Image 1 (cartoon, helix red, strand yellow):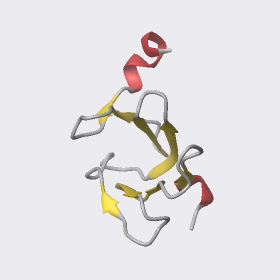
Image 2 (tube, rainbow, N blue to C red):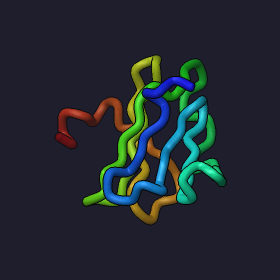
Image 3 (cartoon, rainbow, N blue to C red):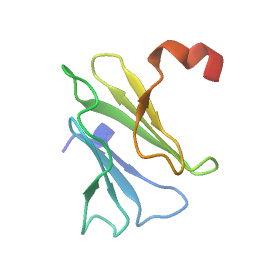
Amino acid sequence: INSRRVVINGQSFDELLFGTDNVYLSRTGGNVWDAISGRLSPTGFVSALAFSPVDGEYVAGTDDGLVFIKRAGSGAFVEITNNLTTLL
């Protein structure tokens, strides 16, 4: 397993994210995994993941340079690659 593709939530240690071409979420310390995205990139794989516990968001980056965010309460990851400078 590529360690860049596994992330533990620093505020809830049973909550983990794992990335392949999709993003998976476990709230059971890794015993059960649920897909929380479809394939994010047609040519790349998830290479970076992050929790944003303050905002309740998940962020994923792919090895072909795309960046996605899943906001609290939303159903899908949205690509934000072109808007990074306005979001920061």
